[in-house]
Length: 448
Ligand SMILES: Cc1cc2nc3c(=O)[nH]c(=O)nc-3n(C[C@H](O)[C@H](O)[C@H](O)COP(=O)(O)O)c2cc1C
Image 1 (cartoon, rainbow, N blue to C red):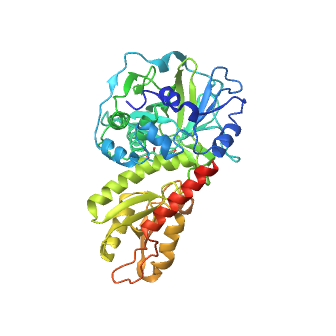
Image 2 (image 1 turned 90 degrees about the vertical axis):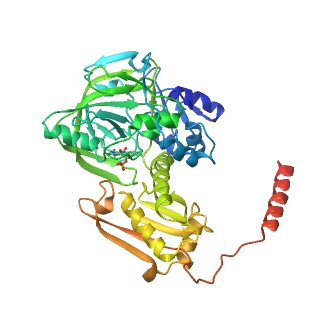
């Protein structure tokens, strides 16, 4: 198994883990340090007001960390993800349940138990940004989970944004019967399970716990929650149990979203029935609109979409979700793909992914991870009148400020050179490049 739990993952990082001994406040200060230290995992060893508690963040803020999370190499990351996410390793019953070492039933003040974090300047309250929310479909009994951010409203109440399936469907099914939806929020799970929780699965599955087992290389150990009808990962650091109240919607936000913009909404409300945790628990942090979000989306969104497109259009080579765009923008590279096929590819991609809004297609001689190269293809191979595809009347994605409250539209750019184009990209002879690299490397070593 890659990592049995969050602790194993952190232990495995050794000296790569930044340990912060300065007692930084969960209000703004922890988030500010994490933003400055992108790319490096951080453990805050002292949290003011919470003796014995630590906060861990930036856990997936680089491909290197994501590779560690899956127990693979950086180069093999996407292939490992694709190969494993298609398989399933079902969960097992846990022999022991560390996350229930300490139990608080009917807590009056959850904010006194957990170091809830405030991230951005205009955030209305502390928000849980990396809660893995687990529930059962009242209609089918099927298990589902997703990452859903939660606004702390004081006492035992949280707002929750349930904008995506499967949990949005489970709530709709519960509300149809006028019943609350039992939920458990797992905080501080092993990173492979966390990644699995945001994989896109259809309404009929597969079970994301099976994907978690497959990504992590061993079955997830599950136990019963104490006050709700939900299975929980036994080796999480913290569990919040509660019920989403039927028919209730309250103002939520402003909240600095993964889009990089503040967002407000009217959202469902959870009443907490229990908080359980390990004795000296590690609280997880995920700062919105950072590399962590890019990595999560690159795996659970980008790798998935690439796999689908490869199966549908000949010549698709690679795909990159543009960092910082909350997966609204992507670049696809193709090889020997005629213009009509590029057009089909654009329509397919924009329709397969609800969130994808801006797609650029380039040839495979363009490095799709280098904004300079993509801009070059757009400037020299793209002819706006001929090479633009616009799809109108699409769903306005809830957190996209440009579609707030209305419908959306999507656009595709064919920045491939097209048939008959005579202009080759300039390049230097590979032998000269190799020699230049060797000479420079020798100079660097001599100066080191
Ligand atoms: C960092 C992060 C935060 C998310 N926050 C929310 C959220 O607050 N509300 C929500 O409904 N979905 C949220 N999602 C998406 C859900 O977890 C979703 O279930 C998952 O991505 C499945 O994809 P699908 O909705 O396209 O099927 C978030 C995803 C990520 C990566």
